[in-house]
Image (tube, rainbow, N blue to C red; front, side, top):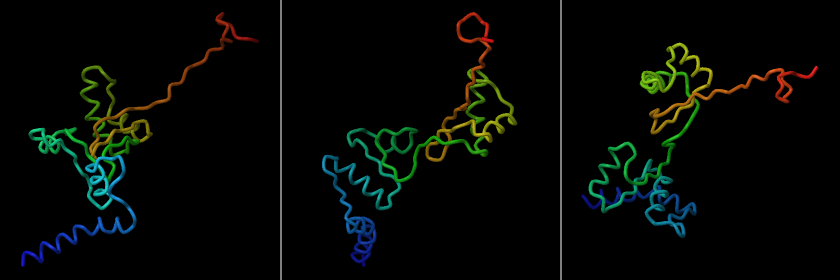
Length: 159
């Protein structure tokens, strides 16, 4: 019957919330909007992501789900966006980011072998959003060569 299937659905879907409240976690936090509290609590109960949208914005759900940055706020259980040291396998995605910049002179062109070497040496960091690399940076130590000058400006070092 439909009543038994709906009651079994509601009790099984409420189980994570029940377990959390039984452990003493409250879903309401004083001073925090209830929508935010419910989204955070849902993520703690096992929901991967919760999206908070402005109900007066026409098409808000489509804009949130199908545009790069969305139009609402997302509460996420996992790491949605992070910066990390590039892994050797990231070189091809780094290359796809750098190639257009090298063509227009913004950055220096690199051979595939040189790029693989730089990535493997740990020189590159990447910005990753939802598992996709969206940016990169090569971080290198800048070393200033010091002359024999003693610092008084005459160019002669001390003997």
